[in-house]
Amino acid sequence: MRVVLRNNAIFVQGGSKTLEEPWMEEFFDHHIHSTLFLDNGVLVLNNEGSAEQKEEFLDTLSDRYTTANELSNPFYRRSLRKCRSAAVRIEIPYRKAEKVDVELFAFGPNRVKLTFLTENRWIMRYLKQQLSSLVTSYTSNQIYIDVSSIAAKARLEKALNRREVLHYVINYNYDEAFMSKLYGNYKGWGHSNDEVDRMIRYHAIFDLPVGSKLEDLKKRYRQLAKRYHPDRVNTKSPEIINKYTEKFKLLQEAYGALQAVS
Image 1 (cartoon, rainbow, N blue to C red):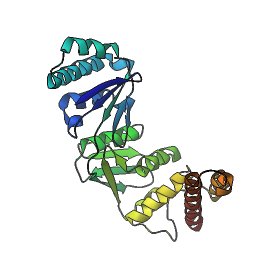
Image 2: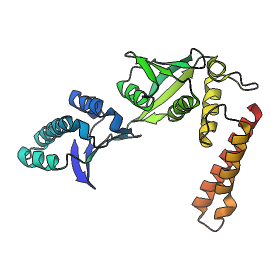
Image 3: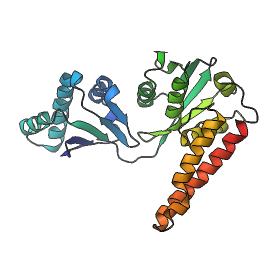
Image 4: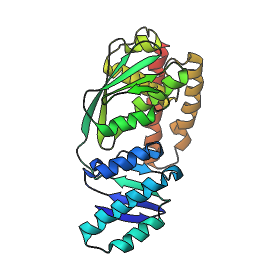
């Protein structure tokens, strides 16, 4: 484990098991609503309401770090406590991504159940945090959410659109009637996992919820097509031109697909 104080933040670089230590998990459970989940770690923002737990965490962090590196504990403890209002970033080194299977079942237009087919406490934490305002109940491997409003469905879609967290790849599996139960029947659109994923991803490109009106889709497409048209950057570097070209192609692909089912 390595601890660095930099840019008013505490950086902790540890092994792949760092997040699984009980004292580390307890810290995150107290700060779950102040935590940002990254592809390669987590960032915990300062939370004045959990100052006591923060100090306990910093003391334990100091003990572990100084013991492992044979350093002066009092010096490091004082140094870390001076930074108790700083954000804490835990970075996990690169490792082969592990797949986490999550099954989604729609009871109807207002209620969805997420079942973890692969046990993973961190992805469970991530989804509970992302969907916190929607969660009605949960067990060790299931989360029940209320999606009775358009805003709630949009929040679910935003969470489902992200697949890589903490070197885990989330694989969502949908029951075959998921789309028709939750949104109504989309004629000409399939209901396989890949097709549902594509539907959610295409809407996310336009920052619109699934089921948006065609008029809203057209308006958003015109805005983004104008913003990302390659002609706007034809005097820039090849890398920037390629970036805009790929974005523009993706906008056209998504727009064409969503037009066909709207």
